[in-house]
Length: 588
Image (cartoon, rainbow, N blue to C red; front, side, top):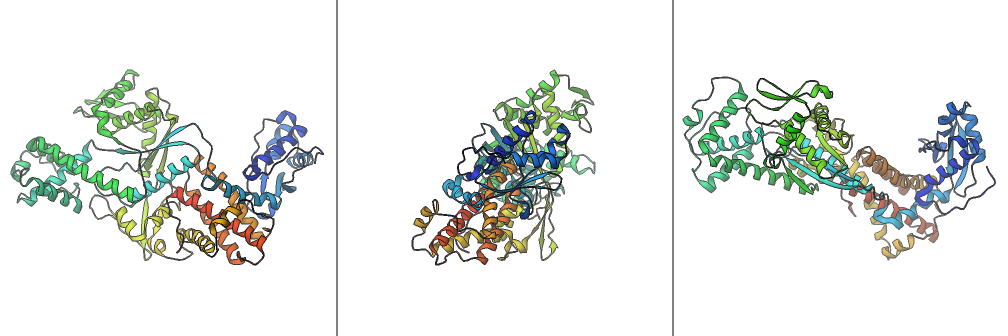
């Protein structure tokens, strides 16, 4: 190493930057023309390979026309000395492996305790993000698929906020269009049956018991005021066997027969289902700053304005009386209708207006959380935004795959419109909010999820949420044995950590030190599942250490150091579980 010795301070959370500084200093001697090269550090998978590894030499090999191993050896010779680096090795084809001193590894304990709930938080990014998620049609109770989108969206928003972004959470209320009309019709048909006017209930209408309940509410409030003869409802219906044509004809008949009464039934159904949705999500720990009405886009003329913008750019054409967007010019598989032949705008048209409105509200990036069945929708929405002159790169879309429930090893049958599906509320009541929130994060969002109900309810180490929460409870139980836990916590911030010299303690310290980087990477990748994986690994490291070593030993200095390590672990568990919306019990 070079004989020059730069000034050093305790690295704390900056050990990564400290090592990068050492490498860049060496680079100035070995290859001054490459000073702008990006220097990356990774955590080796094997402990024998040190604490950090760099592939810098492999990156430079082509430009320097020298073997990576020779470059690595030269870089190591030129590294400035550091009190935080125990040794540096060249491995394999030319990897540079750093092994830290015990003091450098242990420094993270003080850093965690000093920062507390701020440990791992990113600095202000000066960027406004919006996360729009769930946004289910308010046509019935939320089901377990919606629950996964809710858990993912809420965890993602919390993660981005923790990483330093300004985040707004939004629910897009689909309160206009055909699905709401179908719900209103379904409610009215059930209402008619209560007053002796039964009609054949359409198979493609909403079947659930909640529809009957809304019909009963209307009957209790207004009696038979909205009763109409069944024969009048059926008059003029087409002879077609097409269920969608018959359903649309029934809706048209109901609107004509009810007049203003249709608006009341429509609004009542919307209000009841939206209220149920809000309450369900609030109980699930999922909160929104904004509930945005689709209907408001029509009322303010924004849908028409968005279509006019596409027309002005020459991106629309008429065919068969409908207005089409040339979506194929922007990578879509076929062109899309924005206004039907009857003059009614499509959902696609309102979605274009909605996303333009998001940009108008000043968000730097808008993140949509959609179901996996909307994969084909991404290209057409981004294409339409580009056609209007907007920067479609400001829109990020993450897809959430389907959920399958398993009980006793058997898949639980689920459906949607029949009303027999498993609701989010039922799932929460069976396994609890914590298990729901954590289990939903046990797979990457674009991977299908098998939800084991029996495992989620079990109190065993096989249950990942129980395993992580038990680590937190164990530490709390440990502190409860002290005469003055508060004083122990205060003293831990400055206690001597040199007694922490066992292999398991080193592993636990290293895991704690990974948390800030984990937050940064998971936020960048929109991957809160990575946090769930990390917490499982942290809990495993803690349990392994706790089962092997006594904390409350007679040796005061060792006891204080181990208490500090336990407290730091508890803090990181709290920070991570809070992001995922999972509680941190003090006893179990």
